[in-house]
Image (cartoon, rainbow, N blue to C red):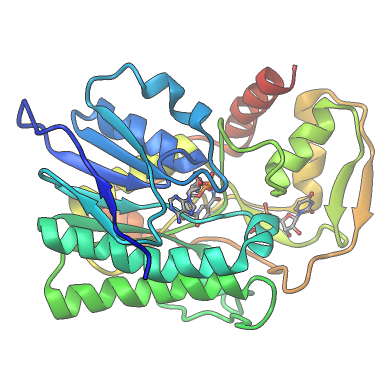
Amino acid sequence: MASPIEVSAAVNPNGKPRAVVSGGAGFIGSHLCEALLDHGLRVLALDNFITGSPTNTKHLEGRADFEFRKANVNEAISVDGDVRYVLHFASPASPPQYDANPIHTLKVGTLGTMNMLGLARAKSATFLLASTSEVYGDPLVHPQPETYWGNVNPIGPRGCYDEAKRCAEAFAMAYHRAHDVDTRIIRIFNTHGPRMQVSDGRAVPNFMAQAIRGEPLTVYGDGSQTRSLCYVADLVRGVLANLEKGDELPVNLGNPHEVTMLELAKKIIELSGAQSSIVHKELPVDDPRQRQPDITRARTMLGWEPKVGLEEGLQKTLEYFRSVLS
Ligand code: NAD
Ligand code: UDP
């Protein structure tokens, strides 16, 4: 058995509640750490950099309430001091990355989730799981409400991610029912924004990097498959609202504005002013045909809905990619 990782943290000097964020050096995790600090919490971020980077939290390093520990949450975690919130965001999240690390992806959704739930239980903390719209697989119900159980292929290339997240949800419910842990599950739909990795292989970074470089945009299949894109600031607001007002049942967080991938590629060419063409490449196995969140539950329970429109969000993300690619 792997030896436990000792994660030490300074004793609370000022009574501020403390959050532990796994995946804190990732795209969404780094925005979340920043928002939690801005809301007056102390933050301990844990990350093993499998897909994240120290540069994502560099701007937080000078903040007295921010602490970072390199840690693999698939192994036992021990954190000293008080903890009010445990937020589990660690996991490879792009199809090429989880395809390249299938066992790690399964472990972080299962063992990693169990370890983070164990931490929440030990500290009597509220636990929040970053789940995904992938639990719906290639959905036969459209748009997807939380009551839909999904259409997932467990043995396809996406199975390591989809099934790990489904197991993670089952773990959260089990800790809630068996140990009375205060748990939350958010199902995140495609989210984009600054600090996404240029080369993580997802549609937004690929299209933007290709447009900025003047290369053809690679649309997989005929591009008629749809996604609904949420800007990261909206998503993070939803996470905080769910911590405050949510219950143990899953809640979709995403922007219901649905577009085809061909429309998205054309929009990014237009917004970037690129001269790029579009080339079609093979559609990956089990690529979901359609994706749109039903956010009725988030609207009614949390009073949350996205505020950043598709074009406005894409402009902001494009600015970021220009800054890192120039
Ligand atoms: P990301 O790859 O940028 O961030 C994930 C972070 O987790 C990385 O920093 C990585 O190094 C870290 N990590 C992975 N395994 C770890 C481990 N065992 N121990 C410690 N750290 C580990 O991806 P992201 O887009 O920011 O996704 C964050 C979370 O949100 C993931 O759980 C993902 O499944 C979920 N999610 C994201 C989206 C999206 O559109 N971005 C959609 C649905 C769900
Ligand atoms: N996609 C594409 N070209 C790319 C990358 C992705 O057409 O260069 C497609 C992909 O096949 C999928 C959609 O864009 O249909 C969204 O892919 P992404 O990896 O961003 O997210 P996910 O499939 O996990 O929703």
